[in-house]
Image (cartoon, rainbow, N blue to C red):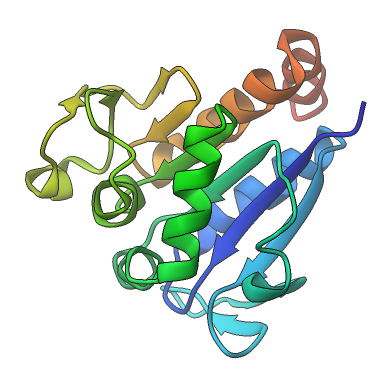
Amino acid sequence: MTFRALITVAEGIDDLQSVTLIDVLRRAEVEVLVASIESRRMLTCARGTRLTADGMLVDVLAQDFDLIVLPGGAVGAQHLGAHQPLLQRVKDQAAAGRLFAAIAEAPALALQAFGVLRQRRMTCLPSVSHHLSGCHFIDQPVVVDGNCITAQGSGAALLFALTLVEQMCGKGRRSAVAAQMLV
């Protein structure tokens, strides 16, 4: 079975988190679509890395994905959190019981704004946890609560990506990818 993941990107997203997510999911043979919420495919990440998205979010909103992921980065997460079509798409994903995930600032600045964290255990970059309400902040690198997976920051990016592989593809695929990467 082929699994599909949508990674949403915006100007100012975190470089390390974005590339780690794309790389690890593709190593797991997940079909990854990197979609820009901006009016262009080429974006500049928080630390200057240039990233070219595969396509535009508006062109794939009606497609089904097994997983939707939002990288962090303060500016990028704010852009993601303010994007109304993405808000509705993530709400629909959550309501359908399909996986959705975010790392660093994105849980607090995007998922919180989307209203999909209510009564959930979750984590985010501790410095933005004051934006949270109606959910249970857990001070751990990665937290899985049903179909919601969250992580604290760039230091947890590899663990987060491997957890996404496990949640979508199973422990065997996670172990194979981790072994390939000597993790």
